[in-house]
Structure formats: structure tokens, C-alpha cells
Image (tube, rainbow, N blue to C red; front, side, top):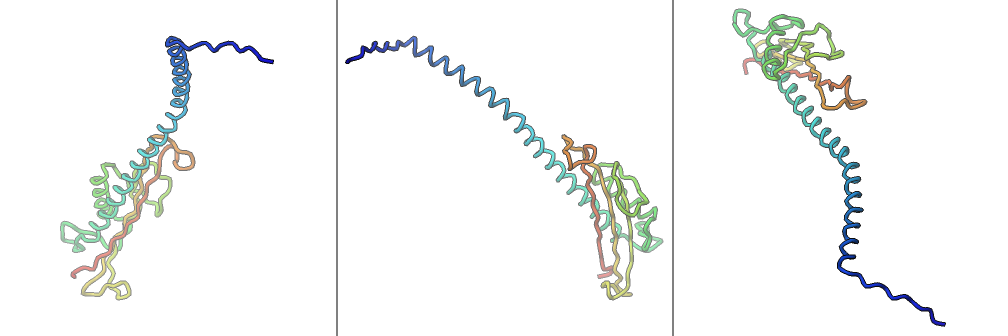
Length: 189
């Protein structure tokens, strides 16, 4: 028994075009859906990359300014009659605070305020917390009467606003940057 098969119609150039157009429409719709799903992911990755680059740059800037403020205090003159005078042994001293604040303000472009707290708390504005300058003549610390060890410590913090408020990483949309730098110098060598 033979079955009769109907002949397969030949495809004409016009039918080829219609099939190609239908495929393109179907694939174009798929491309639009894929694009719509991937664009938010890519934008989030780009935003995070930009934020972390900005945070790193701000942290490096604050670290550098804090280190320079400590170095400025440690290398300043301890002679009370000198114009560039650092008061040794004083934790909260207007002269030392003003010098550290000037360096931080100049290098970061922010306006720092002085806090009397011994540690960093909730840092809502750029804050200069601890400024100490010491002069040590004990041999255990590396100083002597002829060549005293002069050291200065500066502790600062600054809030940094990110483009996006990352959960668990930011505090009210701000990342708190902090720096604690100590600079030691043997005077006269």
C-alpha cells in the first residue's frame, strides 16, 4: 500500500522574504527583552565602580592631609618665641588645633570643625578630633636631651556621600572616612 503524498510546494522568493521578516521580528523582541533585563545590572555595576573609585580617592586625600597635618606639627618649632610654634604636651591646644585644621581644610577643600571627644563618634561633618604634640627626651622612645623625639598625632573623619545608599555599608547614604596619623621626628639630627 502506497500512500499518496502531496507534493511539497516550492518556496518562492516572496515566501522566503516573509519567513525572514517573521524571524527578525521574533528575534528583535527577544533582544529588546534581554536588553531591558541587563541594562539595570550594568548601570548598577558602573555606579558601584564609580562610587568605590570616588571613596578611595576621598580616603587617600583624607589620609594624606591628616599625615601632612601631623608632620607639620611635629616639624614645627617648639621655641615659644618662634612664629611657627607648636605647644608640646597639649592635647586640646588652640595653636595646634588651628595648624592641623588649616592643613586639613587646605588639602581636602572641606571645612573641618574641632571636636573635644577623644574618639570618633558619629561623624556628620568633617571633624578634627584629637591633636597631640609631644616632646620626649627618654632613651626608651629614641630621644635624648640633645636630640629629643618630637611626635604629633592627628585624628580626623569626614562623611562621604555616595551616589547610591548601599545597605549595610553606608550610614544614611554616607560612608564615614577616618584617619589617625602619627608623625615622629628626632629633632636636631
